Amino acid sequence: FDGNFKAINNLFMSRSGYGSATGLFSTVNGATLKNLYINNAYIQHLSSNTTNGVLVGTATSSTINDIYINDSNTYIANGYYGGAVGLMTNGTMSRVFVNNGGVTTTALNQSIGGLIGENAGGTISETSATGYITVISGTGNRVGGLVGYHSAGSITNSFSGVTIMLTTMSTLSTTKVGGFVGEAAAAISNSYSTGLVLPNASTTFGGFAGTSSVGITNSF
Image (cartoon, rainbow, N blue to C red; front, side):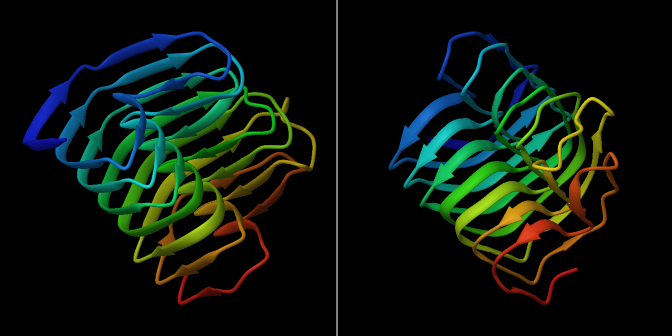
């Protein structure tokens, strides 16, 4: 799909259905998505175990380039969420920017990020996210300004300016929160975060990463 740098304005999506995917494209596999603006999108998903993103719910082995998502607003009851992609498995993403994205969630054992909910093998470069994430309730989540859970792949030359807030209802320490990534199990380099992290008292949190089991280089 080549958007030819055209814009989609006032996109509205509201779904329910266990295990379903929501986005402009719900699921893609081996696709190329490029050159598109999405402005003033609203997503609402009221079911459990879902994958949600303004552009794509679930992307597998796909190439995503030159996407600009502005002023989105989302409510997710319980699922993966990314300002661009909910779950990315393999593939590449570059020059994808989420500006003033907002999400409110009551997720349980899920991954929430300003750009990608979970990156499971994708190569991510030259991306950014700004806006806010509010977690009203739920435990066991990974919440990051750019990526919630970076389980495999790589992230380079990227930026987060997302403010993350957990309310007092989100009380268990199994929630991991970072200004850039909630949990990192794969390489990150040449990246930075300036967003605020406002956790509750029992959350595992960090200004850049909530927790990491790998080396993070030239990043802050």
